Each structure stands twice: as structure tokens, then as C-alpha cells.
Length: 179
Image (tube, rainbow, N blue to C red; front, top):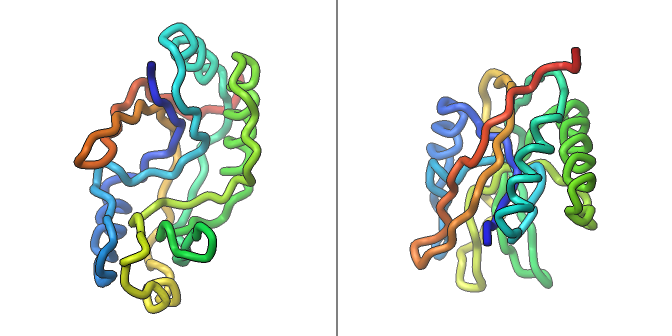
């Protein structure tokens, strides 16, 4: 079985800014450089044949490259307890367009539609009940920096281990308008 997701990989300079911002919350598990991504769609476990169909279907996604900037910070919570610390991105119109095209391609090969709302973000840390307070981090000013170009997306396989998840790029797809 293959545990798959589709994501945008920020360029090295953006990942460096994110890594430099990390820290100061005790009990948190900060993401490594190779874990920083903006998930377009978590797929989950599929067999080899379905994984091949997914890889082929994503090759038919056409959209123009676009620019994003890092935004402010936020947290997701589970039953009122902070669960994940993230950095948002702006603007989101073009990003939502790519998300919709990826979702349509996946549905065409039998992947069930996503039931949760799309909330574009880059996860910075996993938090637990023993994590320190996050309010100071969340209310910090958004990360400054020039917008970055999104000119493609990646189909990743997630391999779980005791040391956390490791992501392997299965296929990279360039963004280009349909000709």
C-alpha cells in the first residue's frame, strides 16, 4: 500500500524563512526542512494500481503558474486543545483553482472527494497536551519576504516511522496553462 498526498513544495528560501521562525514552544514537534509543504490533497493509502492511476491523472492538471506569499500563523485544535501550528499563505484564488483541478482529477480515478474545507497552510509543528502556550507565536507578525512562484506540485508518498513521517516525491508536475 502507498500512503499518498499532493502538495506544493516551497522553494528553499521560503523553507529557510519558515525554519528560522520555528522554536519557543516547549513540547512541540517542529517540522524538518524535508517535511515543509502545502498540502493540496491528502489521499491516504491506496494500492499500486490506484497509485499509478493517480499519478497519470495528475499529469492532466493544467493551470498557470502563480505567486504566493507567506501569511500569518494559526493553530488547528482538536476538542479545544491546540494540535498543529501553521503558517498561512496569500492570495489564495489561484491556489484554490489548482486545488479544485487536482480534486477533480482524483475523483475521475475513483478517489473519494474531500469532505473537509480546504484551508491552505504549511504545518510548522505538531502540538500535544503538554506543549507550551502558542498565543505569542500565533499573534506574531506574518513572515516578511517576497512572494514565491508556484510553478508545479508534487505527488508524495508518506512513509511513517518512529522518527516521524518521511516524504518521498513520487512524481513532479509542472504548472502550465492548457494549450
